[in-house]
Amino acid sequence: MHKYLQRSVTRAVVRALSEYPVVALLGPRQCGKSTLAKKILSLRSRAAYLDLERPSDRAKLQDAESYFETNSRALMCLDEVQRAPDIFPILRSVCDGRGKPGQFLILGSASRDLLRQSSESLAGRVAYLELTPFLIGEVEDGEVEDSDAATKRLWLRGGFPKSFQSRSEAGGFEWRLNFIQTFLERDIPALAPGLPAASIGRLWSMCAHLHGQSLNFSNLAAAMGVSDNTIRNWLDLLSGAFAVRLLPPFAANLGKRLVKAPKLYIRDSGLLHALLSIETMEELHGHPAYGASWEGFALENVLARIRPGIKASFYRDSNGSEIDLILEKGQKRLAIEFKAGTSPTVTRPFLNALETLGNPKAIIVSRAPETFPVSKGIFAMPLREMLKSGLASNFLDG
Image (cartoon, rainbow, N blue to C red; front, side, top):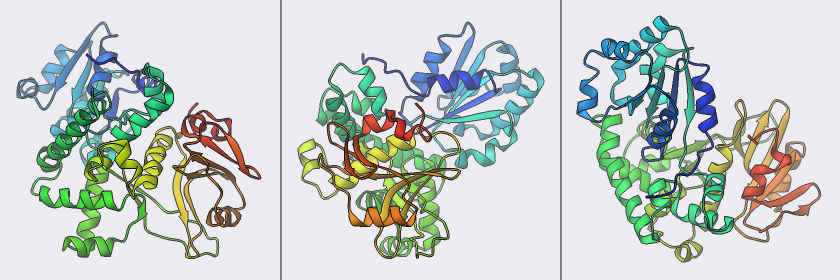
């Protein structure tokens, strides 16, 4: 039995349940949504849980209105709600009839965009929250090992609980390989019936080799033997299933020729390593993807903590000037560069990009053990410190 690690989104879920009739908790399969939901349900005097992948539970919704009426005083949790898209109009009717918050907690393994057509009837009645696999603060606060060891293990194995908490690196690696196979054989056909799962698997593997790079849709389409539009649709599906992230380019009229294609990341570092056949930290250290792997790992931890309304993008122009991540809030900007080394330095392309953007506040997120200045007004700091830093307080949750 593994120790339960407190999830940082818990308070937001509880708060949303006090304000909205429906709260949707979305995230990849096996990231801990059901565990968190059951923890919240255990605190309620009346609660009910249905797993809509289980035939016996789906059968209870043959007369959904009657079932919900029978459990009208309970907080009802519907797990894997994307399996029953016809339930959303009924939820709207029930919520409007009762007129109170905290009626339904729905869990889904598809993004808000993929659920949009089904869930649009709940507009104004639902709060959407995302649960990621484990984050750095969650494992450092909940594990007995020192924080640096927890970060390394999280980086190598990724944040899926059964991978991270496996008794061995080999066990975690095997779990991730099985997860990839199940995702392709079961989840993809469920999300997009008729789509060739083998082709999606090949594309996902190619994405791992492009991790941290700007996308060239035409080259990828040619390699796959399909059209540009097909590649875009398939990538949208992988993005909607929380498998990849497409980080948009910075857009502003700066008198510069800016890269217009998004950057591609495999969202979970453990899945990235499994797709690249990286099983140990020693293998990761010697792999060409070492730096890009750290960039994606740190990026996901930062983006999971940004406040609502923050715009995230990357900067790259035709002269090679670049910034890995830009966070914007109104007129304020924070530039972030990710470096896997322990003694990072400021590069000329980074300084040129900062100058073009008016020299905004800048941070280098590295694997150094402590924070130190690397240039005038620019600090290098460990990921955990950056997430807690007052330098980033306008952009990140504290």
